[in-house]
Length: 113
Ligand code: AMP
Ligand code: ZN
Image 1 (tube, rainbow, N blue to C red):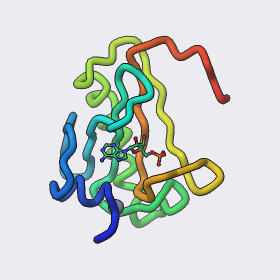
Image 2: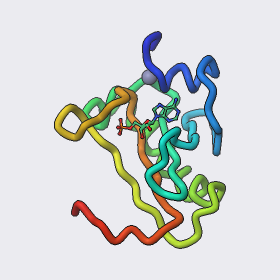
Image 3: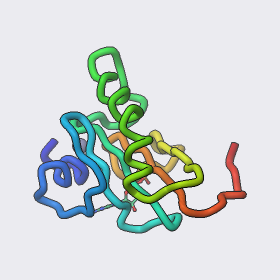
Image 4: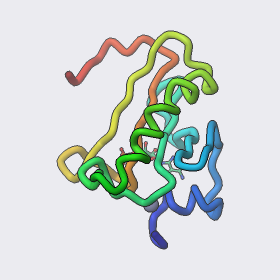
């Protein structure tokens, strides 16, 4: 997608601090971290949000979750992490390319659910 920030990051035309990459998955540090470790994990296919996941693209989501344990280790997370995906307007999703926030490096007492 031409106008998608995260597609540009995957293509390398927008710089990022890479944590991990494979055929389906790209992971990089969030530019405005909300925890001592804050990594974004994205599919290397433009999927707008979790609401757009279907039979034809769900392999990318599976690959993301298979990679997350290794991504957390590579980012230095040792004691657990939180995974968040904001989906759509009411969830205040700002970048319309599916992404999973991996937050760690501190005890997160505050919980939404
Ligand atoms: P969301 O609000 O769930 O859509 O999350 C979008 C995330 O992308 C936010 O946490 C931003 O800080 C992050 N972000 C925006 N632009 C960049 C960028 N160029 N590099 C890394 N992270 C970014
Ligand atoms: Zn995209």
